[in-house]
Length: 67
Image (cartoon, rainbow, N blue to C red; front, side):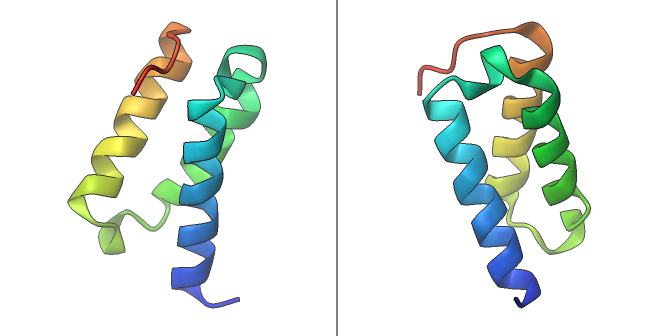
């Protein structure tokens, strides 16, 4: 799998998990996913970077995701 495909797959998974509030029951797993995408920070779009940061805040604070 190419790097762009890996990033897209992980971002799609993160979005799905956040929209289904998976992070509330599995915060460690959800946070680990954000870190696995963050390692590509230099090639991520500004939108993806912001999404990851917001997701990390929601995971850390235990906030429900209502986007």
